[in-house]
Every structure is written in C-alpha cells, then in structure tokens.
Image (cartoon, rainbow, N blue to C red; front, side, top):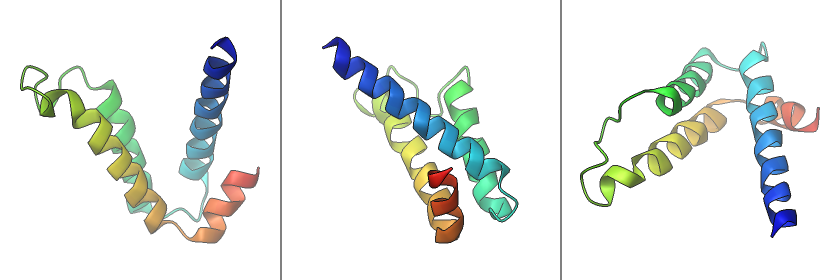
Length: 88
C-alpha cells in the first residue's frame, strides 16, 4: 500500500511539473494559460461554485470542473509544445 501511495505521489508531482512547464512555455496560447490559472484558482478558492451540501453534485464539482479546464488547456496547446513539456 505504501508503494502505491508513493507511485501516486510521484505521478502527481510529475503532472504538476508538466503543467508548470506548460504554463511557462512561450508558445502556449494565452487562453490555455488562462485556463490553467483558472484550474489552480478553483483548487485554492475558499468557497465552491456548487456548495458541498448539495448531495453528490456538491462533492463532485472539483472532480469535474478541474479536469475539464485542464483538458481544454491541453487541446488548445500545440501538440509539439505538449510533447516538449512532457519530455523535459
């Protein structure tokens, strides 16, 4: 179990570093950068757009909104830039 947690932590760190590189890359479109900042802001926001007391939907909003923002940012970014940021 501890090995599994270490693998998850390593994967999360790698993804965080990837999105940092993507954010800083000069060829990443401004809209993609804005979406990445929105994803970070949504994680750090002290309140939810959909309150947690609403059954099911309230708890799932972060698990839906953040991946959508990241997906859109990746789709807006040229694949060469994504590949370069992944390989660094």
